Length: 164
Ligand SMILES: [Zn+2]
Image 1 (cartoon, rainbow, N blue to C red):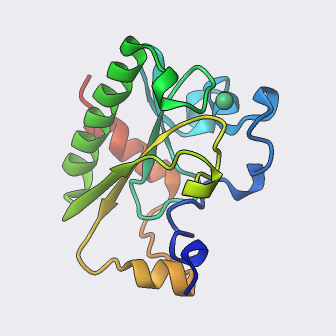
Image 2: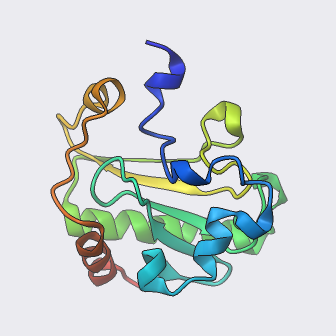
C-alpha cells in the first residue's frame, strides 16, 4: 500500500477544491468563512478562528478548526490567533467528547501538499473522533466509511454540546 493511499482518509476533505488553494478567491476555507453558518456547516465562530464540519468526514463528528485569515504557515500566525486556534480546538475536542463519547481523538494538521493537506493554502486543524474498531484499514483500503448520521444531524449535536 502506498503512503498516498494510507493517508487518503485523512486528507480527503473537499476533493473538488484541490488545486485552487493558492487563489484566495477560490479558497475553500475563505469561502466557508463568507457563507451562512448552516450552509457552510460552521459549528462555531470565535475571535479570528472558526470551526466547521468536514464535508467528507473520516468519522461522524470530524470537524476542522481554522483561522479566518487566509494563510498556509503555522509560524506566521499571530500569538492571538494561535491561541484562539488552540482554544477552539479544545472546545471542539470537548464538544465531540460530550456528543459522541469516542474512545479517542486524532487532532492535528497536515501542512503542505507533501504532508497530505487537501487545502494547503489555508491551514486547518483536524479534530477526528475515533472508536476502537473504526479501523484505518477499512477507510483507506476499501474506501468504506461508517457514517451513522447525516451532516446536519452532526452539526446540531456539536452545536448543542459546544461550550463557549
Ligand atoms: Zn483561505
